[in-house]
Length: 597
Image (cartoon, rainbow, N blue to C red; front, top):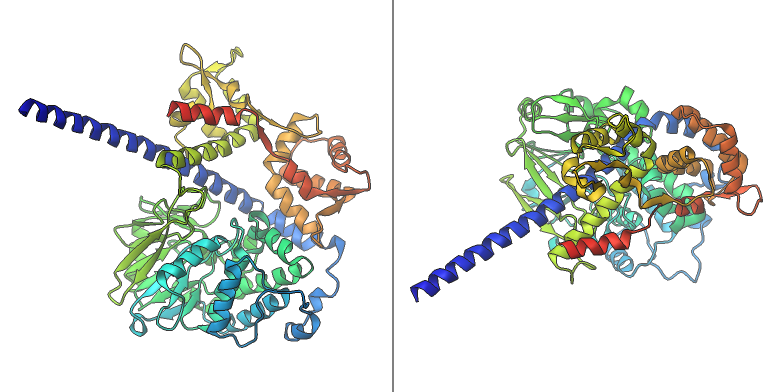
């Protein structure tokens, strides 16, 4: 019996070791997948800010070529009840101002059933929201003495299911249940509009108990790139422009910070070594609208508040990865807290795997409320409950629909495949630069280089902070002698377009998101149609700004090739939708990963 017991214990230990090793491998795969998503996200934001001056120039000088929307700019929001009719066929919610709690309940039920709020009510709601926001200070001061706890939520990014789940678990906003929503309500998700409507409605009903801080995505140009503008125009069509114009002004009136009990500072991004809360409180915040290029020159304090991230090392350095704000260390945090007699800084702005993260010796807390941000199962969401003792309590959750019946291994594999797919597309659109970098280590054109040289070359071109040696097996093939076949990075990828010049294809794909912003500026009625001449003129202007060596003849040829019916107009959104990297052997890769795991 002793021998049997000993064998049983040994078997149990072996199983435990195997299970721990298996879970560690899964966790490593999930972590590097999140690193890929985050690195690509930050690189896109950096590109956005680097082109900010160009986008501002376009808004100021080029966008009006098609004129203005007839009549909409002259609408008096006070007379909306008479200027916009609600048809009898409309079966959505009807609002009557001033709003009551019954109206917020009605909106929640309507959105759960995928109904839309009519444009007249949207514009009235936004107009009333702006009037209240204009009366608020830059920094909101709250006290826990009036309620047992205050709930603090981070980024929602258009994920309505997360907001509904928070309200289900934590209760609706009320005098007894105050909330702070710390920016980035919109973009990326499909229901940004519904989230704004719900938050603004509760804000009007409980202006002293629901509080809104501005995030870096409460910005017109960010919305052009990350999806909210397209969502508004799709849902509200002829009234979309008026809604977006009003929102741009609302963004500028959102408070920049909240302080609880004179001890806890809450901002969307972070701080810098030059953050001055007294100046921030006196600042005319409505002057900082979508024009963040001018903001960087004139109102650097606001950019730091909205864009900065904490780092583990001491000091304050420019946030080169995002392209805006700074990285602030524990010493910067400690000095600011001591200067203003504060205890803690709560911020959002970064996706965290568990929905929150504590750093700087417990003095900085990041809270992120959009679960499944990058992919289903990629991260939890969280919110913070803060009591009068100012001891934070974290509540985590994860909206689970498609992932409910999947095993952990299946969820991690799906996240990993999606992340690698995004990374391989980055390889393709930088193909020329990468091949040039690889051949610096391959003067004889053998097609082979060492792993070390490959990792160095990739890092020098893509500028992504990733463990390239670890990722090698997902991106490139090895020769029998252990060298890297660097051209295998591009083997199974292609872009299907009627364009012969490879350099033009690569450039177009690389700046696809930027081009979409520019064309949305030109396409004033958001019909999705622009003239061939406008396409040609815009691309040449953008090409000049980028200093690309692409001939005018190539641009002209491209313009005519995408004018499919030769009517002089280009359906640019259709062109963009069709313009993507084709992963020719994606299913084969997916199946092989399942077999190997």
